[in-house]
Length: 287
Image (cartoon, rainbow, N blue to C red; front, side):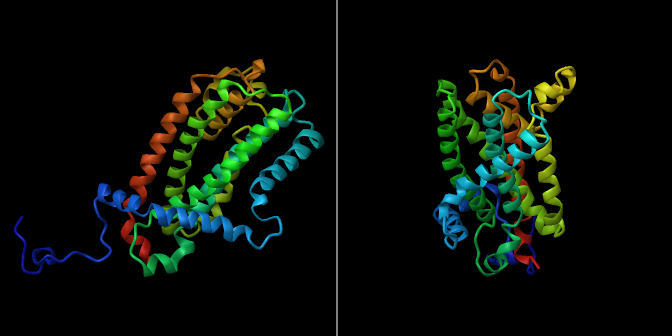
């Protein structure tokens, strides 16, 4: 194609803020790993430095959530009397869901809450939602260690299956990263999304079986159980429970859940990257 005199590229000029190719863009994100990690650590410190218990709230929040749900659904509503080892069942569900919910909600605000930074500095905007997910992951690690300690105290002896939680968390990280990237871009285009996301999170919360067992609830409907396992958060949560609680026959590890979580993780992660990158030039125009 012949370039005209009016073509800036014909004179070696490039557009300021233009979107680079995807591979070059991702290299730019990787080059800013120190910035991403520093931002994640700073957020953790900033969110807890003014509180007397400080970083202890990282593990106290999911514990308090589990206590509230256990009181409401386990005692007052008596809806879980048939679930064996309900306390462990509930704690694993709450700790697992907390990471997804916080990544989705905080990720959706990662661009809109940093307008000054986005509009004043040139850097790959993807760094912001990535730093949010890394922050939540840093908070997830101590809660999972606490979870393992609680289960051990409750009498669940560690098994080799517990090591499989590590690749499971890795896949969960990719899935939540893809969701956060997708939500971050949508929140820029649809400002009302921040009001809608709590309902989306609530939908996943009530359809993931946090405080009740789908296996027991739909024991007479095998077709329904087959459909439910394709809900990604439920699949992750079920695998976590089965790996931690495999001493109970109810929690025999279902191998078929691994391909489901793997496909969800890879597809959502890759989609989130491409979807976010495609609008890179628009993030500096946040109103």
